[in-house]
Image (cartoon, rainbow, N blue to C red):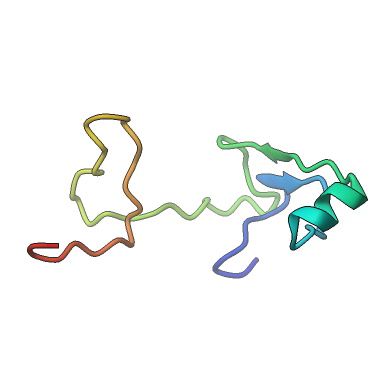
Length: 78
């Protein structure tokens, strides 16, 4: 398992080939679905890596309650 992919026991996509354009998607008719097991366990028994916010609170939008990406950098005056 590398740094950017999860183990298939935690997240599984119905296909490993995704059309790059809307036209290809329409012509192929490949259904796309993702099975997510947020509380799953790795077969090796290792701990699942989690994002670290260095003891800072997770920032959320006050209107829609969406989470802000932890890798976003805010700048003064925007």
